[in-house]
Length: 594
Image (cartoon, rainbow, N blue to C red; front, side, top):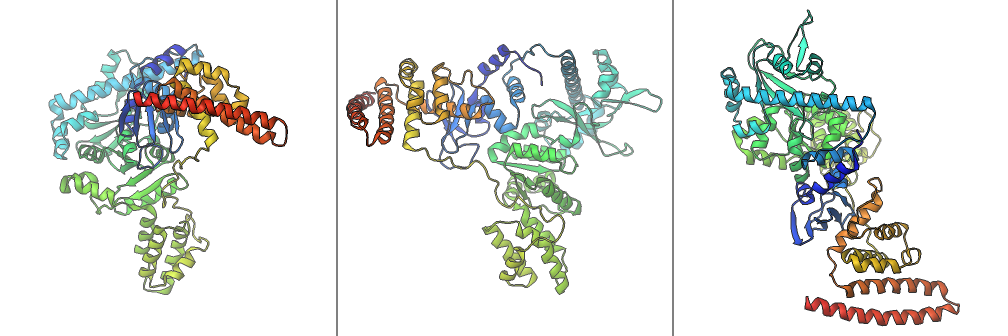
């Protein structure tokens, strides 16, 4: 990851529209000139506790405590480091990042990768033109449209066609100044046994395979006639493309997956296109591969729930078991969509309509139930030995479940199918697993998301409200902050650090906060959002300041009990309370006038 100049990073920050950015993950409503509210994308809630300050470009959830700036949001929602978040934001908001002085070899590698991306982008655009304009692509157009896919959908996914000539891409890329080494590195060209280069993809429908930023890394290519070798041919693994890392359509599905808190996984390219066209825009494709650790990590970043809509045949069921093994132990709920054997999602949408497919997704079952049903379906239930073997297989599945409604439901199912008492099945399930692989299944319960934040006590509320009021009225707040003693008036080290930071800049409170300091950035974001809820009235700031003084005196009185200072402190507290009552009256009068 190159190091970028501070000036270009600042340009990215200036260009960010945080309302548009966060609005892709959750619906937002304006609640005033400097505040938007919505349901928190980081935890489940029914009443909005999540807010955005569009001016300061900060977010905070008062329910779970998540908060920060746009960079933090990208890191949290996309699983990126700081550099990756900045690069994605720069792409999204059209800002050119400028690399600072870097190692010449690193600069050379970065420049080379940029060339490879450019070559793949040019080739993608070429394949698109061929599909829609060339006579020889007529059969490919007829095939795609015959699958029920519409032109806008195909264009949105940039589907194309590779012509039959053996060196079309090779010669066009050479004329554009690209080398054979670059063509080979992208997988567009390969050599025959005599060392002569030729186009790898010919007479095939081309599906571009992009990363989350929409950059094309390679292609999946479907043959259009017999005798072409493999029906599907992918780009070879290389500098940019790694098949085990890819999910087809993830760049287009991630926003909808985040909104739905669910990503739908299917097998093929046309399945993904058909589902997006039908309104199920949270679908991604495995492209015929077994689910890998890298793909599971990508799915977990997209949504907390993964629904598998794979073929119900033996191969599809084995693929789902493999998915369960890979997903075990992750904070991911795995579910299985009921699919008729031999029918793929594209066929179902064509035959039954989008609503029927949506209903199937809604009826998806926890992966654990799928495993139980599969074991029972393959068991010899006529004999005692067969039932014992089924119980041994089921023990690891049921035993991994915590006490829950799902566990009771599955115990009843097993007891009914095996002709045993529920008490016996439950007791056997509590025993140790006996078969390898029985640790599978950490998906039966919803994964632990952010829990509700610990409620702040009166002291913490007082300190944070004071700092928020200082942000709301920066001129008066600057003087109020100058008058307080950070060590005396604030009781936690984190709030002291926040107060010290705010003394430097109340207008741009996130300025200078390190991206690595997640505690401080989260607290500053919270204070900035609290500030949007405060009245812009100097009397209100005085109220908060005097409440801070009162809290400090109360702590000192408790510490001084039994000494002569207690009486002096009590009198000081009485005087402060008189001023506080007066300030509250003025603040109330000001709010009535407003």
